[in-house]
Length: 107
Image: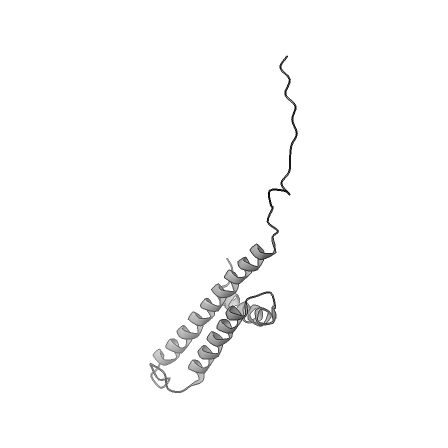
């Protein structure tokens, strides 16, 4: 079974590769960068929905927001990867399709 935490830590490495990928749509790269920035600021900014001075719940809420943002970023990157793959696959036109010539004889 794959370790879930290593999966989230792997998102960081993929995230920076994704930001540098020029084949990915700029809007998706900006959205991912925005989500990471907002999630990071939320974790480190002292004024939250539940302040960090509240035992356990304050840090739990920060972690939940950050992991939720990572999950959204991962979905954006996976969706963009599928879009790039579809874009790179050449579509066959009717002229490029394979033609099979068959001769029928009735004996």
